[in-house]
Image 1: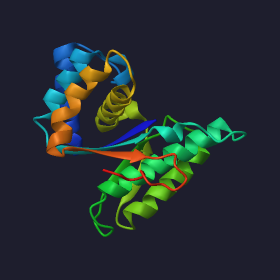
Image 2: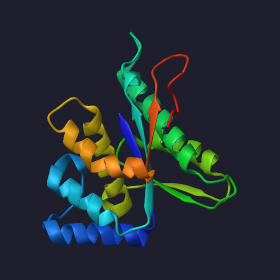
Image 3: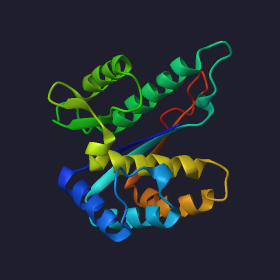
Length: 193
């Protein structure tokens, strides 16, 4: 499972998505699973004109639930751990006023309300955590492409090398930070950047 948190102002995200659509002719919600390698690389190049940073969390060995446990509950638990870790890593200071927008389309309302409360506690009393449908916010759509790119970068397929090439300069510059969530009970690999 991968999760990407993108720090970008709304105007820059809108301009990036508008330019991407202008060049590609694509309409509708931008999803990482629906674009090809050239379109993905183009989005990253268009992002170069904006002031942004991202943190991507990956759960690799943590994907396998313990025997006898519910797969859905396990999936939610991993999602929450990734979200808390990634957001916690991006929050500059607890007294800074930031807004966190989370995709409202992944889980049910009760689960998302609990997640929103967890994130609100991380960002502090001055910040705001809210749920949004990704088709309404360009930043969530761009974050989806980032997460999907890193998911494909982690998978051993013919696309892995190309995905790695697309994101390599951003990892090297520190514009994208990568965090690993370990399935190890001791957590020896958890939160490693």
